[in-house]
Image 1 (spheres, rainbow, N blue to C red):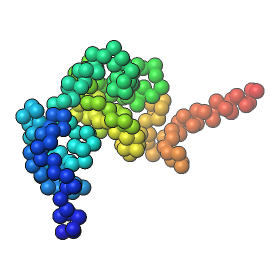
Image 2: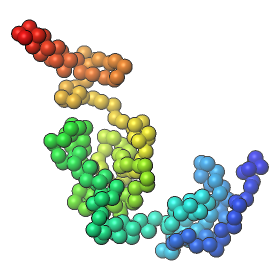
Image 3: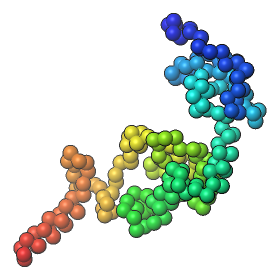
Image 4: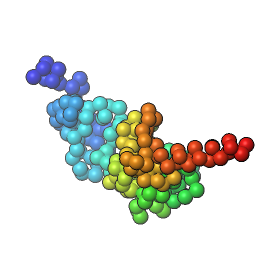
Length: 208
């Protein structure tokens, strides 16, 4: 084991209070990154292990029970509609319920729905998702799944770009098959749409 792995944390946090959490004892190094961690007891009575850096920077303030309280405070504010969370909730509903928007066929048009708990309640959505960290947006873990607590997260654009679904239809709804589609450096395209466009261009040029 390396010398770094044996190093104790720079500060003894035992007995210190971080919002709802009281540090009970050192938990050693945990997690995939092998970071300093502490055994903590939350004000609600739950016991959790929290990374040293998350306690010190204020990223973790409770076992998770604080999120509904924070959500409720945001919902009761008169400017809740100006928050990132509210805009994400509204955009989710637009994608699934408004057939007049561009990109409808990627969401509601292909059967993506919103769970009953969220569809008419921003408060429920916020309680389940928590506060959106800076730089993140709403993302579905399974891109073919619905908007629901078990399938949604706040994620970076980089993570979302790697989580795109494989297209099975073109924008006009034609099914991609070996004969009806082709590839170029920009991706997969519909041969049917291309042929129709070429036909319209031929007719336009012929009678121009």
